[in-house]
Each structure stands twice: as structure tokens, then as C-alpha cells.
Image: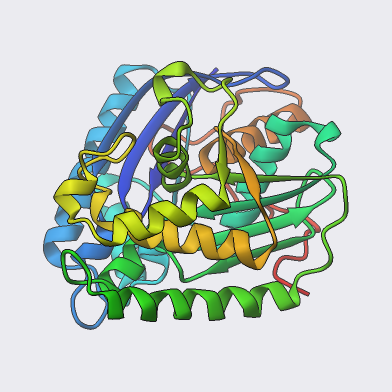
Length: 340
């Protein structure tokens, strides 16, 4: 079947079409995406502006048309922290439903963290042992840990690279004082999170997902994306420490000339590096592995598992293209999310 995944993130709005069936590896067929940093379209009260809403609805209409042209049979549509935490998130979701005919499922931070872990587990396999995964988005930072297919602990913190850049590093380049304050803030939040986490059981695979981690790994010498997803990519804390200091002295334009850093993400790569380094140091991680699968793949695999349990891939009453086929109440049955 051809399955669409419409991902409304904090930095990018992205439709991915894959050809897949239960038990098989999803194979990318086509994609349609646009840079739309919704976190920058928030007013002083934290509401998404009229301009931001218009851009969002316009893209979703394009995405639905793209999915229809390419004969998608089913589509998962979801949003994360940019809309979840905005002051007018409910109104934005209602407008998307009304004007674009798409119901966006609003994933909680814990669900986002858990579904990303789920994708990592499928990629790494059971021989990885325990898994500790980090994911840096535009609005939030997710941490998940466990020994099973779903995590025993999943947590989302308001430490996204876009959010921190907007709130803590407005100057270009940022002042040393601002960078120091941000580092202390991030370290404090991560120390609080670490204190509530259980001891990590060996053997453990420490992994990272998201464009931010891929960019940081590329900066420190990992293979470019053109080398494909099966090339092993790692990120060392010592290398990252050097790059945090270098990035802090650069303007956004200078960062955009670095390998693996796009013009859109150049302003926020410093904040992302600060979070990544603080997380590795707090959890005592010297090196981690970059995993190519993340939230989108987790939701795809979850959907395929549900279809397999139902005993069929399609049915007469399935939702049409553009409508979510995801029940967030039963997305993670039996999983107690959050740090205990």
C-alpha cells in the first residue's frame, strides 16, 4: 500500500509517501516539504499569527493534492510542539480541518518521544540491548529509555533548538554572556530530568535522531547524507565540545557554509549543539550513534502493525486521503509515559 505521513513540525512541514506492507521495511516513494518555522510565527502571547496560519493551510492543501496525484491509500496527519504549545493551537487545528479538510492528530510530548524510540528499536533490533535515545526538535527535546519495543520512560522537555534560539540567543552572533546563560539553563533542566531517570542497564545502545543531531555529526566528520542511511554515523562529546565553542563565535551566515548545516537551520544549530552536549555530559555519554529512523517512521510502523492485527490493509470504511487514521488515545496501549 502507499501510505502518506503528514508531519507538521516546528521547523518544517513535510509529507512523506512510502510504499509498505506489514513485515516489510517502508520504502520512500516521494515527498513534498517546505521550510515553515511555526515557532517564528508566534506573537507576543504565543499565538500563531494569521500569516503563519495561512502558510500552514496553504501547504496542507498542497500536500493533500500531492498525495491524491500519487495515489496514496491512507494518510497519518499529526502535529507536534509548535501547535501543541501555541496559545491558539485549538483554533489553528480547527481552521486546518475546516479549510483544508485535514484533521491533525496532536501528539503529546511523551507520545512523540515514545514513537521515536519505537522506530529506533525497530532499526537497531533486539541485540542492541537497552536503548537510550535523544531527539532535538525545533520546539522540544525528547529522551526515551527502555529494554522493550516501547520505552519504559519517555520524556519531552521545552529545549528545542528553535525555541531556545528565539528566547535566549536573539543576537547574531550571540554574546558570550547569552551563551553562558543558555548553557546553565539547559544543564539545570537536564540534571533535573536525569535525577528522575532509572539507572541505564548494560548493554545499552545510545542513539540520537533528528536533523539537528545529523548536522552535528556531519560537522564532526560523519559521512554526508548522500552516502545513504546504512553508513554508521557517530557523534563524540569531545568533538562536539570543540564545535560548540566554534559555533558560538560564528554568525548564522557563516554557519550556513558549514557541511551539513542548511541556511534555514543555521541560526539554531548552536542551541541544538548546546543541548546535545549537555545531554551527553549529563548522562555520561562519550559517543552516540545516529539513527536514520525517527518519529515519522515510528508512526508508519505503528500503523502497519495495526493493519496487520486487523488482518487487512484496506477496508471499505477507511478514511480518505487527508484524514488522520490514528487514535492517539490508543497509540501506545498500556504504556505508562513520563518519568517515574
